[in-house]
Length: 145
Image (tube, rainbow, N blue to C red; front, side, top):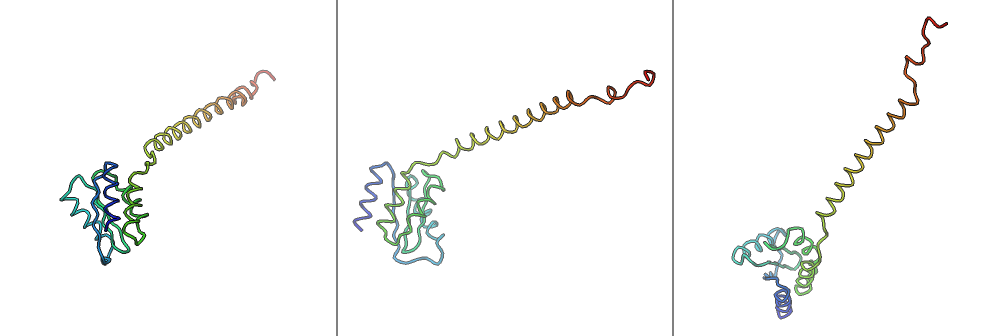
């Protein structure tokens, strides 16, 4: 298909070694497409492999994280191989969400909240001791009456 060749050429221009396997029928289960992609990827270790059937998509890559490949697969299920391949390629080039930074910020926030809560707890205890007199101060000595 000439449209798929255009997608592959576009991928190469972006520095992505994309291989596309096109099937004319759906396998019994969609995970077979990932298996096909993995086998092709073993023959082309530096390649990102996309396997398309009429209804399913599978992929393999050592260059992209699995979450990115899965996101690409999700938007590549169009039924049109050229559009599917283009959507997949677009997802590979999309900026990734900075999960590591988010995790660090959330951990620092939780730690700050815990330290702040402990500080307020200790401060409240100190104030309570100042306001509430001890038992010894409340009881009058027996000899004073």
